[in-house]
Image 1 (tube, rainbow over the protein chains, first blue to last red):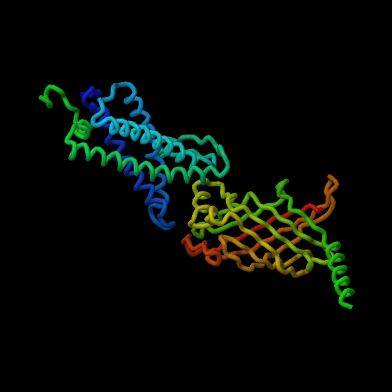
Image 2 (spheres, helix red, strand yellow):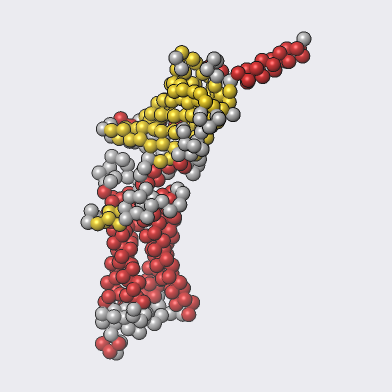
Length: 186
Length: 189
């Protein structure tokens, strides 16, 4: 029940999935909101600080999640062949998008040799300016990848709902609670 | 008659050109800088500058009024030593450098105030808006350099209101204007 089976995700994968889902969507909203804060807003300084702090922790979480995914089996795909292939591709793009966001986000704020603080507990050091106009270029990438990622997340969620309500299969259910072959499917 | 007039005016232009020596601003050797300062909340000065620019001027100590200066600034080179702030300033709230990659100054008139002090009037373009400004200028010195060249250097200051250039992001009542501090050394061509 903790680990994945051929039929279902286990508790570890489920917990990591939903925790990252909440944080990713929260980070998107926070990011979108904070860039338009005016100078005298009380959150002008703190919102980016939290965005960066959570971003670094999210990078760690996703790295752990990827290791957990690779160290256990994945449940078998559900649906038609093209659906399974598309799902795999979308999952891959979601991971790629996340790591692009982590790298580009890191590069924005470290372009001036300053590290990134994680809630004043620790500082991730800077690698310095690696290319010209780093903060601008990394900022553009960060913004566009974020929009693309959320588009993919929407597609991912719609597909899950389609499987649940139209196909009436186990795709969504097995990501909410591990399914036990004997108990649940007899 | 007409021909002699043209010849005479051409001649005067030529002699005029010969009088005022042409200089190229030594950005290559970084003996020139474009700096700014703006108040932070009204409590302190925040300073920074543009790292990339180039320009030329003509100057003759005997005839300072004939001086001319033209400078082009690469706005993407804005630097206040803080990446997050630089990104914000270069974005569309302020300089919008993707749309307005260049700022420039072209002098229109120079007034000699004596003692090496000059008033340089000219058109300054920033954020796509051109206004005439006056740069209070002081000659720092001129003469031969140790490597066979000849140099002349100036310091200029001017104050611009951000709103005059269509930059209206609210930084507070103490921060509506920016002081520009220009240090320019030219090498005679």
